[in-house]
Structures are given as structure tokens and as C-alpha cells.
Length: 146
Image 1 (cartoon, one colour):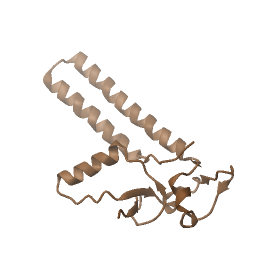
Image 2 (cartoon, helix red, strand yellow):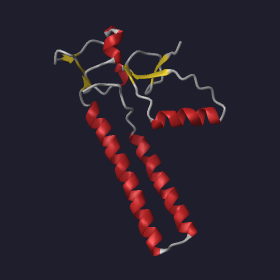
Image 3 (spheres, rainbow, N blue to C red):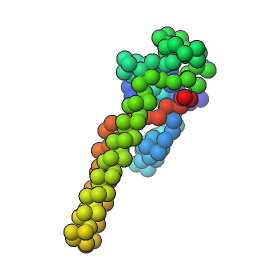
Image 4 (cartoon, rainbow, N blue to C red):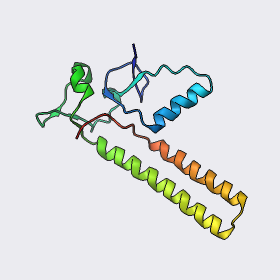
């Protein structure tokens, strides 16, 4: 049986399910490549790790303020909406595209100025560095329906 862990605080708790996106799959692959045990646990985002302005919107349209432990399994697997989450996720995706776009722009400028293998290598490293920099603001994708 898979255990349930919060992606933020790494404690065993209930919460909203996190989608297995490329970043999580890459982290799990990297851990298994270096010999660390990967249990493929189910990842969630627990109520304790939500910022105070994030609330689960109930199907009736109101804000549900019940503690996450009181939610039944169906509510946790298929929440209607998490207020504020969409903005944070959109900001993360925008920053990620901006950082990668800036890296590509600098790489193109560098290659135009000096077209060499060393410049190409530096350009690739710059794009990779800026992508990793964008991960500092990573917000996991939740399984929610709009």
C-alpha cells in the first residue's frame, strides 16, 4: 500500500493530490539512478502547508473551512477549486517560461557575436541554469477540476 506524504513538509498527512509532472518524475528517476530507494508514495499538499489565503471551494460555491482531516476521501480526490492556487501556479509557469526565454535570447546573442563550440556550450549551460533557477518557485500541479 502506498503511503501518503505531503510534498512540502514531507510528513505523512492527508491532503490534495499532486499530479505526477515531469519535475516529480525527474526527481524520482534521479534518486533511483544514484541508488536511493524510491517508494512511489502518493504525494499530496497538506492543509498545514497551504498559505492562509488558499481555501477549498465547496461544490455548493462557498468556501470550505473544515480541517483537511475532516474531508472525506471523495472530496480530497476531486476538489472543485482551490482559491489562490491557480494564481501561484500561473506565476510559476510564467516565470519558468520567462527564465528559459531569457536564456535562449542570451544564447542566441552570444552565438551571433561569437559562433564557436565554446559559446554553444556556455549557451546550453546558461539555459539549463536559468531553468533550474525557475524551479526555486516551483508550485506542484494539483489534481483539481475547474
